[in-house]
Length: 126
Image (cartoon, rainbow, N blue to C red; front, side, top):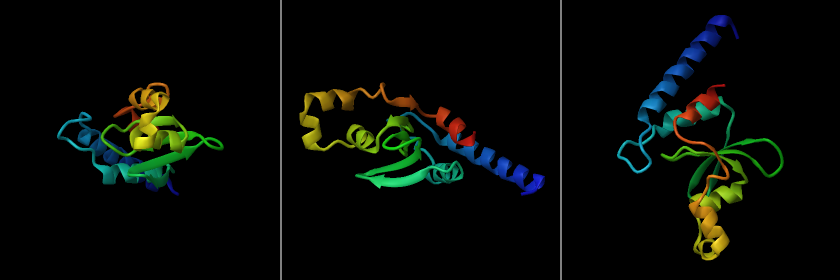
């Protein structure tokens, strides 16, 4: 690619990132994230899409079993754990909620969350 094409691509990415940043609201609020633009940013950043349970996951693998996993919802959290663990924490089944150990893991995800909300926009751009 020529310098001009690279520059135009970067400008387009920056504009898209700014529009996504403007659409981010509080987790329980009325403002919803612009998922279509966020998907396009994640495609540029080479995240792999997977649909698990009712979750839209974008995965950047670092080895067998684990990697950086972004859940596309208003929370926009990046997890550093397995896909099964993220699915249990974000969309648990009744069987998983019965276990005390799992209930504690579902309620407290600070041990696996790398970052949340608008800081994520900075990560795919790098």
